[in-house]
Length: 239
Length: 309
Ligand SMILES: Nc1ncnc2c1ncn2[C@@H]1O[C@H](COP(=O)(O)OP(=O)(O)O)[C@@H](O)[C@H]1O
Ligand SMILES: [Mg+2]
Image (tube, rainbow over all chains, first blue to last red; front, side, top):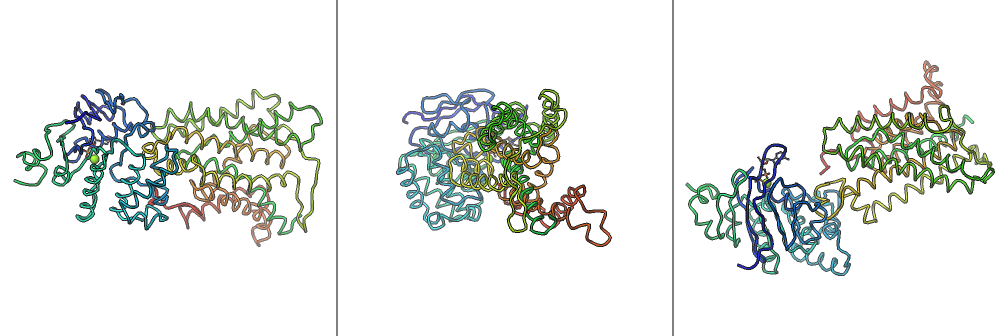
């Protein structure tokens, strides 16, 4: 594998006295798609929110693109090249699609580049282009997910973190999202994906980690995890 | 003096002042869901800041010259106090239980009143505010005082600037984003602490303008003037739909008009002759608030809570 863009070591995160992430270590290689899978409450969202600075770790280290995060405020993280499309999409409901996309480029000053990237988002997700002046809150779940992804891409991130992009989507919509992730990878974006839908996620992942109650219990290439007996039992609904 | 147009005009002047103060409640609430009960006192300090500047000017300075300087002085005073309150009282309590910042706000409110009462020279009783040596003017049957003239010029200018700022400026868009979803706003690279401070500062700025309106209208400023005015403005903010800046202004105008109408006309209704007059105005203002909230719990222009992020 190539160099690691993200290196997480012995990361621990707590809500009050309750530790939700209990010392996890993983890496995300440059140019790869890396997936965290695990049941509800495993600590995946907590991990991503810590990486993007919304939560402070109680221990461990985060190295991203040669810098140490962990005490960098959330609003500075995106400018380092780390974008986060949060669980539940969290688009700005009372703003238009275009305004949402523009907020994704909030820190950028290169107006021509921004315009170009907005057009790119509309090419990637044509439905967003058709509705650019519509309030984002009126979109369907799948469309909101596209918007959340498009918005995260507007910062031209080195690493794109997607928290359960397929949640609540129709199978067709989910395929579209997964296909987009493959496209993004081909275009050189590194992706850290969190999914409940292990089958879909692992089949497009270079590397995968399985989380369980705050710990990483298994890791391997996407293909290897898909073949793993315990993964098939616990996450792919096979007995 | 007792004509309908005159009462409407009185209501608008009063309401515009309420609306300017209400902006502060509504902006802060819209972004951090905090009712800043010290905002009435921030308004009051704006009045004293303006007065201080006037007193520092050479005797006999024309008010036309003094007024802009007074506005700047009032604004600086109010904004600094609001920023201090945000930084040292509210921000440390942002993740504390809801009651904590509320208690801090009440403490701050009483503290500011006492500070002005005890420390500002001769502020134990109302201090005279300079009056413009112009007017009154008669427009048709309406009699306009010079202080009111200032209000009808200042309030719309302030509102237009604010609307353009919120809609068009980078900081304004960041404010909207922070109001709708503060965590996600941070993910966009927005420094939400800065945005929250900006909301407090804008609220204080408008309160200072309102304090000058108040001083010119009533001819005095008083350490306790923030209580009534603050309560009315808060009512206006809720009436218009708290969190909505246009709602704050509309709520202020509706409230001002209602008070003026009630003062003038309630006593003409058979059997209610004792319930009119100025002393009952506040009561009718709250009756109106209750009626509106019964019919539209989110306020006139408020959004339903379900729409919030
Ligand atoms: N804001 C919070 N306060 C307290 N506990 C939380 C909070 N968010 C998540 N948790 C707890 O932390 C654990 C991990 O949650 P989360 O990271 O959301 O898991 P996942 O994303 O894998 O479903 C769970 O036990 C959850 O109940
Ligand atoms: Mg989750």
